Length: 561
Image 1 (tube, helix red, strand yellow):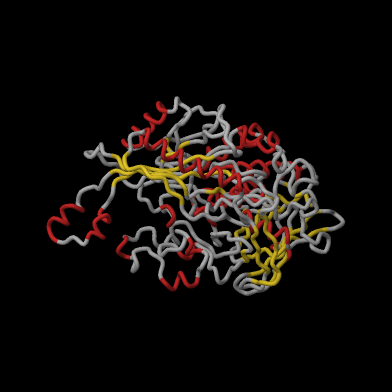
Image 2 (cartoon, one colour):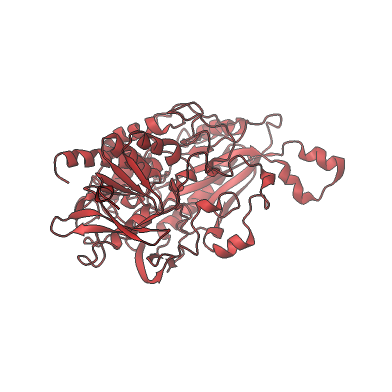
């Protein structure tokens, strides 16, 4: 390749939610950017091959086949393995990893990454989320606070397009919304009764989501089809393909290279910065070097750390960013799969429209506003109310006219909620490189050694009981709490392992997401998180990326990078 095709103003590694934002912000500021994605290209609309298919067009009605399960022992642990979009989830055989303790790692290696499959819940952190570590003496303090992030939350929200209701709650700051979706009749009644029963301290609101129902930046808007994770030809939800990639491409400054596995950063010992990246072509196995004065690592929390661990090992045995002893440590997720459900006897003459792309949300109320528990931090709930459909009759073995008549009517109302709790940043929860095992391309794999601990186990008792209490107070019948099998990783909210901090001695990154030992390397995905809050993290990644990109360009123009 010609030398001028190997050098850029900036390199972005990864094309998911944060990588897409990095590319958009850097290109719009005039930089020539190379975006590297280890997986295949996925073009907006054209490559959403199953999005317009009806259920009966899938031979197994969407369920995973035995062959798929045999090949994917990790993916089959949860919903990710299915017949609808199997190519968007990583093949377990090609990309193995080591589990000293169970960790469910659900990855998307393709252009757009998990921005095509994510749950789309979008929430700002509150002020206390950024202060909790310092106040409680946990891990290390955040080097930034809510005021640092607020203008960048606003910046990304205006472009991404969010729906939600303005509630004026300190525990869950409002965002910029295009509109709000509606609670259905049962959810609204429950919201009113819960609010009254708990003296305004518990609130059920519509979930805040990156789905839009109005035109926005060339996107048509949500059609209430309930097919989000198959790719939306209408641009109904935020994804790299629908949002940030078209914006970056429109500048004429972006080069996208799929099938490009970044093996390591090229480290300049004398200049104490990265010169570029070493890329393994996933199709040809040929190796290339690309250079740039700025590198953004957005390969997802664990893969960005993998790249750091595999870089500059001749200088630091643990890799670039390891001098603090924190690289690979403080692995977090959100723990869930615990909650309650109940039946509703009223409103039998009412129904709801289509497949609303969000449910309700109940913000954190434990260890908040005067409440004090025997554990730290808290949790929120996600859930919905709905009516049973025709499938309720399948197992009844009915036949004939009576059976047909029964399943043609809506079933009973039920409502359920699932808690999502914060996991503390334990130094002991970690990943390492396992150089005894390799993937399809001969690269070392990650080894996981992490688990829930006493604080989370205590929290889970409240997550179940409080859900039961709220449903009963709202008038639901046959209320039952439940708890299912959970392991770290199942929340698909992996965070930490290359945390931000206040000094090189306590962290991998500074307050601008720069690696202390290589300030021209920015890490702005989940790896950077110093704590986890209990709300979905992707909106924070977006804001953090935009903030870091702005700083990077300013520093580059000053000649500091």
